[in-house]
Length: 631
Image 1 (cartoon, one colour):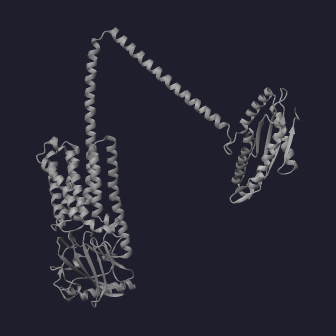
Image 2 (cartoon, rainbow, N blue to C red):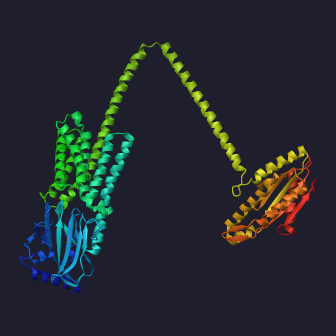
Image 3 (cartoon, helix red, strand yellow):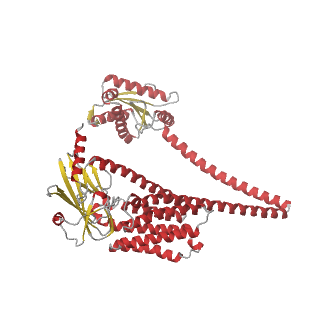
């Protein structure tokens, strides 16, 4: 038989031996009890004076056995002591005690062993924002001390200005994390649905500008705010240092939501047009909810819970009566709206009743408001959509009727007109429309022509540029060389051409990659352009590693001097790539001649290329000149 099974059997036998009708039931720390409300295993004592200490409780007090799974003491400012007896047997991992209700002002935890020795003492509650009990949990979570075996007794001292509910659970640490994740997923789906409704109806408001959709969006926002506080997703989780505001904010958000519900019902049901007999009282009641919420937040009165329950219940009842007053069986939007308010009634009343201990605190009375709010808002959204469709259908029917009437009147009027007047009018209209159409067409054509001319200019500009170096490309070089050659013939001036070739580019590419070669070519273009722009020269990218410089109207010696300045500039220009200094050299060839009608621009290109080949053959960093060879 496995050891774990033997240990569980021993615990059960021990519990049977310890059990007696006069003693509280002992709870074994067994996985089977996880997630079960432990109210039936609790004993409680009401401290009327509120001054009893743990020692007084240990000396003996008249304990009473709790009968409900979740004790509900309603609205009471008395001090309640609660006792829970636990039996541990060789705990393998930590256990947690969870008080799953966040609206408690003060909860003191005392853990005592079987001999009566105090093992642990903690304090939590809305009045203690700096507590170390569950600061990142939605509720109060107490880690139990780990012992190998024996009995533990947990005492809770509870006091609150709000309703006192004690849903107490035991969890293994790992299982509590998994349970919390499942709850968080459900809450995420819940608030996500509300968020979708908010965004969808606000979008409809931006399209239609119907204020009813804006009121619905505000109602959805207040319900999100209310449920965030009710489910401990507000200040307790996000701003734990302000946890004392959790209770007043629950009351404020509930009254704000009630105000928005009443405002939306008033707009949807059109109570002013329906002549609802309680219309004036209903408006005053709605404003009382808003004013009372602000006063509760400001004064934080201990009677705020009763005021909230009274106003919410009364507003819900009056609204429900207004729905019945306006209800018509053949009106689908009203049917959806009535169903929504039935759900609101079934959710709000149990919550209000359990807060004042009229109904027990359980899963239904605590969560009915969430389910009814979500489904009710979906039904209201459907009712608004159906109402909008009805309004559109009515408008379309009115427009159709108006159209038929206009067509009938037009037909009668046309019979009274003479045929010649109809023809003349038609001709004038046709001529005017044709004239307007022609004028519009001419304006559009003028605009298109300007756009086309601008596009052609940009394309021509882009076709002349080398994208890598931003210099003029070879195509534009051929055009400019031809133009300069013809101008030199007319003006009888000399024309010179320089070719600059960069060496070792392939070596840099093999060693450092293509980016190194591109960087060498780009920097070479900058050096050549910076030298020649002061001598009225224009620079072009002739080939991958060759740059051309056209120098119109200068002598051979001056062209050679410009070539020498280009070569010298590379001695003073460091070429860096990725932190490495590159040894870049160039070969420069100069061609120069006096153009005349028997020569072609290709002659000058041939001279410059020959000079470049000569410079390459002589040595690195060399300049060669060929002048008037073809002249």
